[in-house]
Image (cartoon, rainbow, N blue to C red):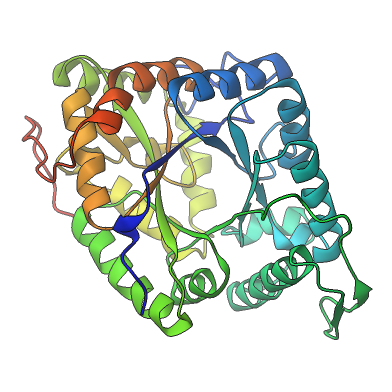
Length: 372
């Protein structure tokens, strides 16, 4: 029987922005993701108490995630990187060796986030024309093969997609390479329950997360595994609640209408259930979908589109409310990422590291639009 994820220690990660960064979304970003900037993000995150930083992997980012990650790890110390990878882009034996090499060169600082892919049009840019169902079949096969190779097994695997004859990784990384995997669909939950160390969900209302975790625990129990659960969301924190909401409004105040039009057009072809849910949240008239939960980022950014907004105590309380549901890993971000990382570290991290769990979330002044 699976034990509750609440028994796990709290783990906090930040986001390593591989595209343009700045104070506004939906417009030209003023800061490029140079190697010095990426290194400063990693070093600052480590100083603020974050264990690692997630990288994205998509066609429109300025950098390839693996190349940028290795370069950044070589230039920094402390915090690690959670490197995103799409199974459609790599043979599992080759990627297993790549990741094992990185883990040996940077002990304890390499984790892997498996991304099945959500946008058929973007996938096609990589030559990936698989259907949603086929992508998840491939993802499970890819992830299972990574596990076998990193365990030291000499793999003989006869399949049309990944025919491996005597594949092996040697030397093995000094410690295991943690695997994160997220997704809204039943297929995603099943794969995570069988193979992941951490199952990731995108930010959502507390009732929606409760339902998602109930479903996932059925899969984890069937697999006989204890899997950590992580939540990925943005955060806008200021010394006062009023200042936080003003900062949230400012973040989306310069969205270019053409960027918005293109974003809406691209979103129409997405077949990811998780991405469709984020779009539904962003369609709320007030954008406030629950106390302290705001969907404004989803107006011009793919992936997770919600942010926790409030003063330090409110933000900490909201995170504690998620933690009370069984979430023990949080992957957070804010714009611009360097400054918001330091701000969160200074304002909220002490409350999370020292305060006892608190489920209640303070009332806030904005109208909350119920989203089901």
